[in-house]
Length: 118
Image (cartoon, rainbow, N blue to C red; front, side, top):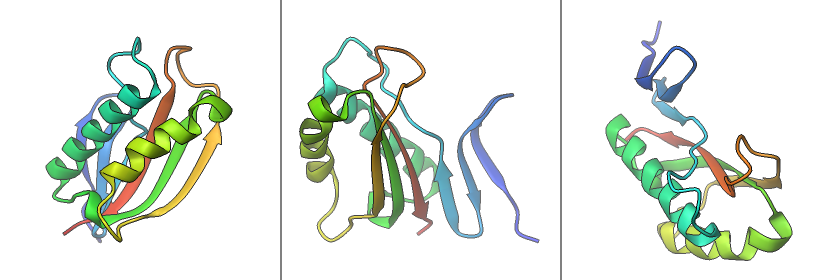
């Protein structure tokens, strides 16, 4: 049976879970909720970079991504501008983006990814 490793865990959730050569990240939100969408997206992607590195992976190993936006009509293009610049050439994962009510009204974006280890 494969070992399950949990990173940055508390009683409610783990920041990342590693199992079977795959790392599953919890949804990541920005730290500074006063920022506009581009900066919130940059903060979220930096958190993802950090968690992937801690798990032994990186954005070049992405398998899938789920993105939630507070206002898809207003923020989709701006979020994609930051996302596209962050992704490595040829490294686009399977992805879904939807509009959703997020945990706090000031959160404009939340991103969850799954990546291979390596």
